[in-house]
Length: 259
Image 1 (cartoon, rainbow, N blue to C red):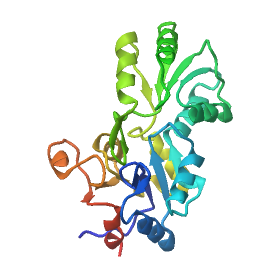
Image 2: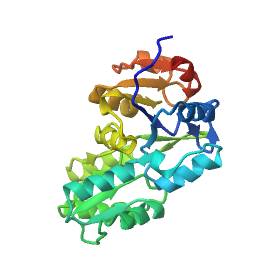
Image 3: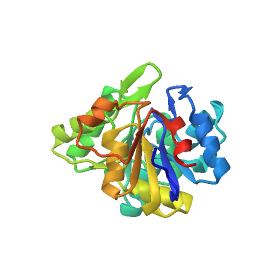
């Protein structure tokens, strides 16, 4: 198997790559322990915007991973940074969970009932009233910004509907094109490189999804490792137009590629 010697750091997806729902994937804890022992920087990149960075760090540690909040970069973190840099004076109407709304407040982004931006996240608490309010805000001129484009969210028992169908719903109903910040947007790579103090050109993306994880690597011109522990199957890769640098069964196979 081809070896990896010059990686500056790993960007590692969570759902379907490190765990499924509440269950760690076999060998994942050993893989993270290997990276730490070898001194290889890593950041977990998740498009799941229903919870905070600290939630994911606590979840990982509860599964037996020994990681810090600084090891996690969510699409929420990236999107809020983007809004503060690009639209510093504009207000938002957040469409998301209570944890998400609290993270928006903590970031300093101002929430308003007459917003400049409808901020769409993965919302397991979504209601008709939330959808309708967001619809009218967009019709009244608010921009539509979404944290990520995923259609499905993996769980230990299968997949749940994610944010993608709601993005398309709002776009079709209002004639507005959403700005989508999470993977595959290369801003996630730029932020991850800063978190790790690593050369972005030598980062590698590890993930289970072709249209987010692998697409981001292709668009940024960096290397990738596709794992078959989540959404994508070998047949799915063969039938796509996506190319990957490596394809392995799971992250448990990666340490031997680095020896």
